[in-house]
Image 1 (cartoon, rainbow, N blue to C red):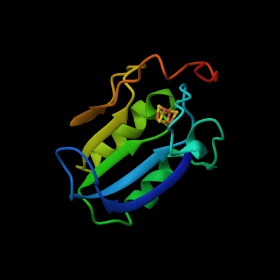
Image 2 (tube, rainbow, N blue to C red; image 1 turned 90 degrees about the horizontal axis):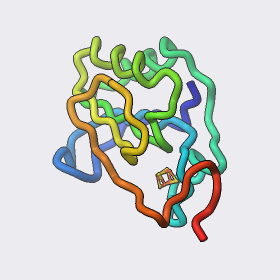
Image 3 (cartoon, rainbow, N blue to C red; image 1 turned 30 degrees about the horizontal axis):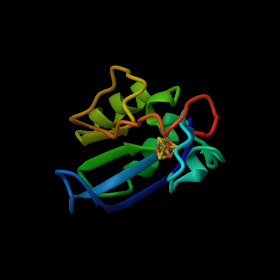
Length: 128
Ligand code: SF4
């Protein structure tokens, strides 16, 4: 699956603000928000194609007990379900950050949903 970046930081928002976390940012999004600050995961998706094993090797180099799967839109990543299952096997607390437009039965402890309204558009088109 295409991963834009994987890094260790403090969660900067929500109920887990300040918690040391491993961020796994998938590349690719089905929306085109005018305010998007991660164009490298939406209309200009960048990153490396990594296997689940390669992702897990990087995750294990960090000591955090929390993982945040974000994007882009992680729910459209083809291996999102097995990725979250593998993270769960490591005993990590898993947050999935999503726009809530696509739903899959991922393994997670917290689903952080940021709904998008009519000023976001799907299918690669910009809002009028
Ligand atoms: S849903 Fe998020 S990642 Fe996708 S275009 Fe909107 S702000 Fe960017």
